Image (tube, rainbow, N blue to C red; front, top):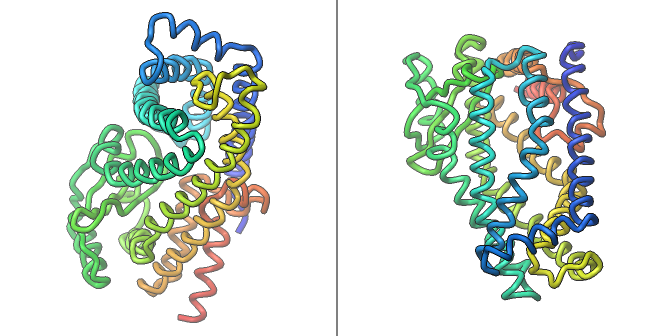
Length: 369
């Protein structure tokens, strides 16, 4: 199971861009702090914006716009140039720019909410702010998980009816067989942006729906699509969404606690008035970036274990390991997946098991079945 040379080349570029982006982010945050720009920005905004909530929000918005403009060339190269270079993207330039701007606006809105809450906790609960912040982050994660299918996804893709009635019925039968509520089966116009293949089960309870990328229909057989849907169904049956949210809540709580220790020992060194001084936000972001990178292998390893269990569920439910293997091979070819990344790359960057590993799992289960 060798990776196609073009896929290897694609992932070498993506992995290098990840490292470059990480170091650039560190360099920018350190420069903003050491140059005094952050204090200068807060001081000049304070002339026209009242201190407190409005000043915090204004600071974050201005800094976010500056960072967005500075990082746009890098994002454009990775998200548009590289994807077109490897013939994975169908996006026009105007469509890419619209999507990029939408993502920036959504991130800014969520960021303002997070910053206002975070700095309120820092000011009012200096000793226990990290507990309140962790609870707030947990609540925000649950809300975003709930609204993403109905609010966020439609901003980028159109929901389309699945005209293949035979496939629709097979998917419904799969959910009936596993006693899982299902509202609908829909397509999204994935092909308007990419050639990659994907599918998902989204929503909770009676609002649960299966979403199929329209790119799947022309590339995979019904059996192979059922294998993908069964994998996504496995995530629901194993309660993986809940597990991921709870795991994230624990990790975030630990990160906030550690950042509290570092922040209180270092804020005065950089000239910030207190831990709730908005000028110290770059310091807080730097601390969270470093800590987040250190726990990345743990997070990825946890999610990979859930993905492996969902693979096992799919194979055991459908009892078609050969179909699963052919589906994986087609996904690998179409998405330019690296079937055998180095162990270091897998540990640091992969939240799914490598394709070769997933195929070996199917082969092992085939013997048992």
